[in-house]
Length: 215
Image 1 (cartoon, rainbow, N blue to C red):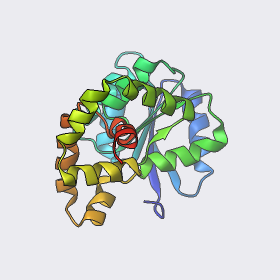
Image 2 (image 1 turned 90 degrees about the vertical axis):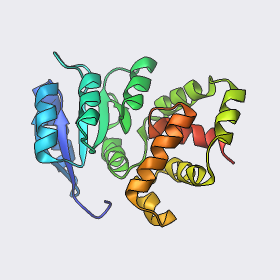
Image 3 (image 1 turned 120 degrees about the vertical axis):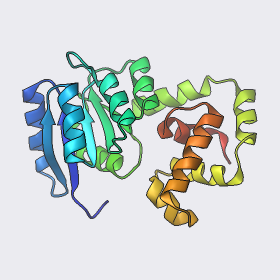
Image 4 (image 1 turned 180 degrees about the vertical axis):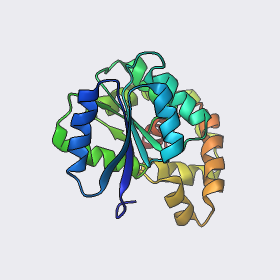
């Protein structure tokens, strides 16, 4: 996707924030905001209608909040990358978002100059996390009992470990399929199986787990 236009849906209940974010993204040649939503219901509808590559979404919205909207998008089969962009650095919020299918989590007080690169990173299937949040996530994974982690690792097949290592390197399912000579659908099956085996709920958690547990 690096040579293509990244189509983006902006979801935030504050019009001023959406305007500022849109203006910032439009300064980049490869980032194109294609729609805006001020609540979860509109976000669900527009994500289905516009089929964006990436959704940038706030957590704190009236009615259906960002976490519920995220869950409903994944349940509806919306496969756009979803990047949470919020003020909350609460560990529970970060983990809950990633476990429910978010592809990254950024804080609104981040340096604006770094935002475009993080957006590209998320759109291309890599983790988009501020360093502080990445450390928080790694610490949460470390808290799992070590013997349980080793037992879970032994339950993975050779192919699942190959897929897991490529996830940790930031590859999308399509990229993994090309490198391993298998279909994207087969990769999805492997990802689902390895997440179940490791008791993880997102590829971001899986990537951190792989970095700490696979040679």
